[in-house]
Structures are given as C-alpha cells and as structure tokens.
Length: 201
Image (cartoon, rainbow, N blue to C red; front, side, top):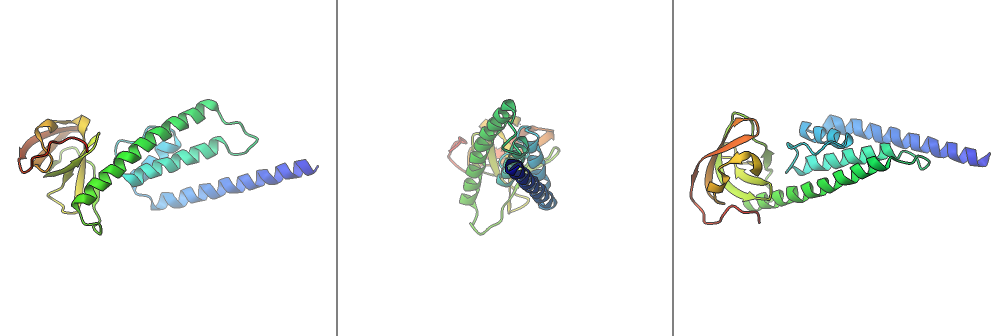
C-alpha cells in the first residue's frame, strides 16, 4: 500500500514537472526571435540545426533547449525505459550542437575584436537578391564574416561552401558579394587593403 502511494506521489510530481516545463516553453516561445524558435523546434524534433541558426549563439542555445525538451519527453519517469535509438540520436545531435557552439563563439570573438565591447552588433544571414559590400573582418572553418557598409552595427555571415570566388579575397580587404539565387553567393569584386590571407584562425 505504501509502495503504491509512493509511486502515485512520484507520478504526480513528474506530471507537475512536465506541466511546468511546458508552461516555460510557452512563455519562451512568446519572447523568442523567429530564428531561435525555429532552432528550438528543430532540436525538439531531432532535426539538424537549421543553417540560418549556424553562427548565432542564441539560436544554437535554443536548439539545445529543444534537445533538452525532447530528452525529458523520452524519459518522463524513472519507471519508463527510453528508446536506445532515440537516446543515441539525441547524443549525436548534442555532438553537432557542441561543434556549432564552438564556431559561434569564435565568430563572436572575431567580431568583438573589431567592435567596442559595449557595442550591440547585429548578425545577419545573406538574403537572396541582395548584394553585400564591406570589409572582410574574419573567418572560421565554415564562415566568412563581413562588415556591412549599409549598416555600421551589422555583420554578414557568409557560408564558405555556397560562395564562389572567396579565394580571391584576403582578410581586411573590401569585397562585394552578390546572391542571385538562394544559397548561391558570388564575389563580384574586391579592393585590396590588407596583407593577411583569408584562412581560419
């Protein structure tokens, strides 16, 4: 009898915990930027990190919160044995998450070298049809970071794998990168003003 009462009490506590987590999710959903919300939902579904979220610390953190929610749902109670396959998938996604966060931190540190610590810098992804002009201020394994001439407090994150002609550009040079099609960037011109080659530091 006492054992059943203890189990019932534990079940009630876990139900309350799950309700609390769901309410926290709803509260966060109202406040989250759209890219962060999409990243959260991708984590919850065990999808890959959305490419728009890569390089953005807040979005990658939101993806991790989605993974946490999925893991909680997979193991809601000590008496429930979670799927081994699902837990393995969660572990694989966490490994990708850790790598993405390392790169996002590297991007932030490179941007901070260019801007005052008190400055609020806006990170943007290229939009199809737009052309971006500005100085190349840094690079990582997967991204090239460009200051945006049209907005002094903004940088553009260009994916290396989708931009043709990046080998022409050196760090600290000015470049013009056009996106005529989705996920297709082309370096149209560059103006030499530096001596460092564009390799990840």
